[in-house]
Length: 323
Image (cartoon, rainbow, N blue to C red; front, top):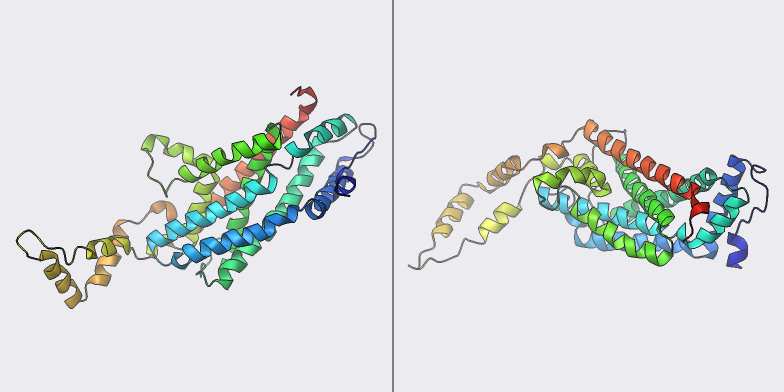
């Protein structure tokens, strides 16, 4: 039944069906695959992953500097993970069918546009799921907007663009890979690159920092931190680490740190220290500015278009592929 509902099989001379008509034909095929080949499973998986991340780090989002950085990185990784799984096998699993139908009149551009529309719908639903899970688990979300009038919509656009850009990158890999096994082998490597080169979460040598501009996570993390006004948040990790020294005894039995912390607490200086440590660790890259958000969105859109263009060009030569 699945085969009957998912194969298009034009069997028509080249040019007989126009680009627009072919786009809708293949779009229908993709939605049938969503139902009959259980592609819908990516939706509950998105909810589960969002729930796990919200449970572990969600409570710290937009509460403190370090909590926001960690949580933003985690939510950006959710989006990348969702996008990769959406389309990493979508082309390579039907490579023989595409090659046959291309010879029968399939326009590659129509095929790619159909995937773009279908994946956009899928990514939009996944973005809504993530926001819904965050809301239900009482994760603090942005309270002010920069780029659009509604902060929730603005946050949703960021989540969608991260997911969709990752999705199109996976689609590109799927056009290159010969088999689903090869595609799934490449995916972990791509995930590691996205994690390590996020630009802010891991300390990297200055000479490799320009390469972070190539990753989805860099622009996604930056946008989320900017929307949450990262630079105005307190930094508590420095105080918490220092406070552990309070009762340390020296070799002579004295506790010098106890005197210091007792003085700080007696004079109510704790909050001032936390605020000052935050001021010293502000990151201009995360400025609460609409231009920062627009820049991140623009980069995500540009990379999405590059991935789509490259995937189209590669598939245009599928007839010459003798693998």
